[in-house]
Image (tube, rainbow, N blue to C red; front, top):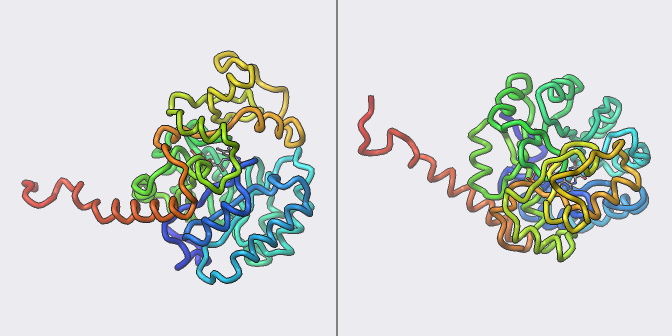
Length: 320
Ligand SMILES: Cc1cc2nc3c(=O)[nH]c(=O)nc-3n(C[C@H](O)[C@H](O)[C@H](O)COP(=O)(O)O)c2cc1C
């Protein structure tokens, strides 16, 4: 099961710090990449294409002296309601961004354009049908965003969906959803994925752009505080119950908005009501991203080294 050649020797742990609307920016991306984790951010976190280009230049400049830094990625929302897609893609091509993460739509021309300059395209999927379409379109990686993942997510059990997708796709397979520790990253690899996709865990870091009240809410929440609903943005996703209450809505009686809209309506929804995954229960600190990357790498190595202990054939056990 492959990691892209462009990642070789540049990762401390097979993790992508997932792009998060209103949360990830240059500080988080640079810190992750400098510490062996793929950093990423949504292009729409900047208000304009010019601002987006400035962030790309800033990130490249700050990583200039780190030859072995992990590559970084940009998330492009490939949905007809995103008015900036064409202009943002032109900037991506000009700057030769190493990794493009596409969500909410598949675009063959985009894939061709990114491959044209040697970039990689990873595509978000929530089930086998979407995975098959994206594999056919020639993406380099599939990100299975499954049960319990923060933001837009599918409902499927990760073991079931991973096994399904692996049967039809031999590229890089990434799993997202409620992952917070290096041991869980090791488990993801044993379950058949190549990399893990962590959002909520990186939201609770010093470098994230999460407001203070959201940070406190993350520290206090557990998995049962996550509500899975299409009512916030028109697509099923996971959101923090206390933030729904704070916005004056009833988490147990939400009505779905009329349509998906990546203009002002969507931005307002995400500003008032906070997305997070079921992994919140395991988050009880706000480390610097560098420390989190190191911790994940250490936990990952320890889990791999200790895995033999779990064998039913461990020393002293009767066999056969
Ligand atoms: C606050 C927040 C904002 C998000 N914004 C985006 C986004 O703009 N684009 C995107 O593709 N995914 C977005 N996601 C989903 C993440 O990229 C990723 O799939 C998810 O966080 C993984 O699950 P986890 O949070 O349980 O680790 C967001 C997730 C969160 C928590």
